Length: 80
Image: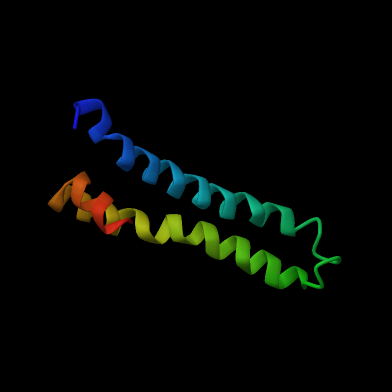
């Protein structure tokens, strides 16, 4: 296996995970204007948005400490 082919599969996996992550993040913004057609209450839509972004706020420092201690490779393997 050549050096360039060795990194192809991990690159495709990371690209696929980023696509799914960004799709779920962007579909959340669509809920607010279409909440009546989806029979969703405004409170539940806003709680969904807040909980999505609260994850960034609440996990930033613990994940940063984990990566500082074990390195970025271990962080990619554990998929934070």
